[in-house]
Image (tube, rainbow, N blue to C red; front, side, top):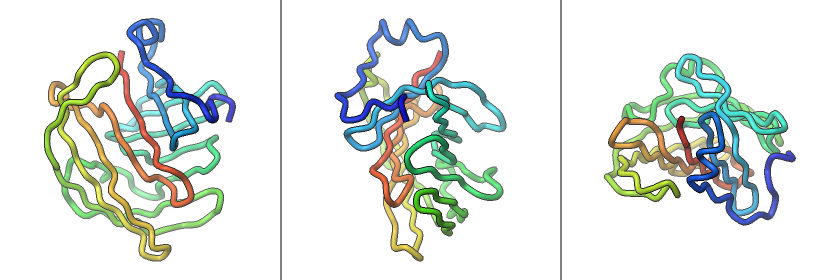
Length: 178
C-alpha cells in the first residue's frame, strides 16, 4: 500500500499540517513501521469512512475499527454492528472476518471506563476519558485489551490503540476533526 510509509519515522502533525488539510483526517500507525494519513470521506449510520491516497480504507464506529480494505491484512465485522459502542459496558459478541489469512472468528468483548488523563495530540493537550475493551476469540486463543480515548469536552474519539488482526501489530489511530 503506497500511502503507508514503510519503515518511516513518525508522521508529525503540526499546526501547519493540520491547517493545510481541508477535511478531518486520521493518523494511522500499524506497529512502528507503517504510517499514513487517511482523510474522512463519509459518515453514515455512525460509521466513519477514512480513505488513503491509494484507496486504503478504514471504517470506524465510535473509534472502534470495524472494517479495513487495501491493507496488508484486512478485517470486517459481520452482522448487526448497531451494538458496536465501547462506551456501553455490555458484553458483546460479534463475528469477525479476517483476510490474510482468511478466517471467520467469534469475538467476545466487554468494556469499562478506566480513568481520566491528558494526552498530547501534537496540536495541544486534550483531557480524555479512557475506556478499556477486553476481547477474546477462544478458537484461536487471541485476546487483548484495546484502549479508547474520548475528549471530555465534546465526547469525540481522540485516539485509540487496538489489536485488530491476530497476525498484525497494534494499530494506533489519532483523529483530527475539522
